Length: 328
Ligand code: COA
Image: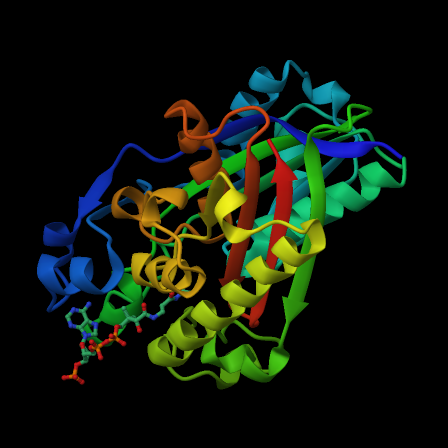
């Protein structure tokens, strides 16, 4: 059975830096409040008009180049985003067309902050069954266009950023590296604890009062509590599947929602923070893009090397959560 291996990683973030200080232009907030509760110092926001598919395209181009692949080599595109360019169709087909491809299948997935881990699991299954050999997996988000800029929006608005990450997942016959296992979970009982409920097919457009916008809702404390517990469980599932001790994992890459969540998970396993790669201070929460952006930067900084034991874990809206164990 072939194994799925991440061959090339790419990332793209818009050049516009928005600091915590900048947010004071429309929110009653402070750098101290944001940094002490989340670890975020700044994030990137697009200049409008912008396209999530286009951000994904920039990241994909780099991932393909680093994997030594051309667009024609891709057998399947998996695009994870909660902020697509259109209500439908999804960004996958837009990216496919942008890459100059004719009929390559493109699949959009809506697993929010767990999108990359879910997407990696999809790529792994297609590769292990022998159906496809090369899968392009992209996580990309533009969140600065839908966050609520009114005073009530400050709790959510300060946390999110724009960006994209992409990986080329390839079949390999080498059995000393690649994705060893993925572990997926969800719990729809909590769907409304972190959501953007509009636009919705449950509501007729003409019945909506005022503007027809997207307004995020988040029960911050409930999300925080579940994130710590569920990411811990997901990591434990990966450790148990591989028979690994927490200490023997070289690097943990957790979805970047809040550095305090990562600290709580590290404490639960009795691990030093040095085992966890974090860059939330620079980008905020980039949802489906956060893990591939981390992989890119960890590799660039020499913290992710061939042969390393790696665990990825994510938690997000749905609730959805999951993990992956791999040898880099
Ligand atoms: N700036 C200043 N004050 C703010 C603020 C902001 N941007 N946003 C909220 N506040 C205020 C609230 O109005 C509230 O004020 P009140 O006590 O007068 O009512 C107070 O800060 C709440 O503070 P606190 O109780 O310390 O909040 P918290 O510890 O729950 O932290 C979050 C808030 C959002 C940072 C935290 O709950 C969190 O990180 N949750 C998980 C978020 C997440 O990860 N989401 C994505 C998952 S994928």
